[in-house]
Image (cartoon, rainbow over the protein chains, first blue to last red):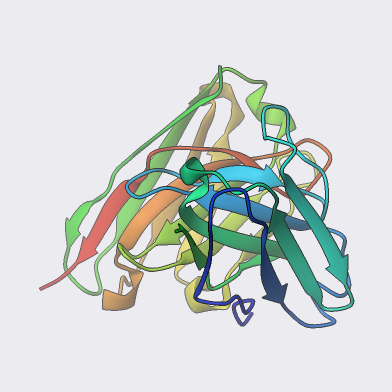
Length: 110
Length: 119
């Protein structure tokens, strides 16, 4: 049950694209298509942005997209906007009714 | 509108117990997996436990196994976390989360209840 590995921070200018990686193992990310991504603004509860690797809940802008290759999942924000500045966490099902979150990534809009 | 309201947090001495509650509204509580997630202020999220009322399946993070017990009362639309033998490292903001129907994600979160473990 080790935390999934994410970069501590990524940054980009408005309108640019940024990608956040989430590296796990073949017991979690690599084994299940149950990767989700959460956005958290300071002092707020997390918000679901992507589920099942690449599905967007209703109301989440299309500029957020997800993908997965082997043991690494990715979240891409295309056309970065100032309101996207936040912390982002990935999460994967890890079997036996357990889950594991990523270490978290701070996205800064320059 | 889905609402999750946690309660029960507070200051507790190491080794003592605390019971967290989460009152749910705005959805058919019985039909969804429910989760507890915690976050040390300024740090990352950590999944703690989940419970599926349909299958009876329960899971825990290794660090709380044998000390924490998750339960739910569908009639009261409430989720609970009994925390025993509390340690300093259990100090965190505890969120209640609602699972999605067909996926494993958490699509609604409460505002959290703060647990402080200190002598």
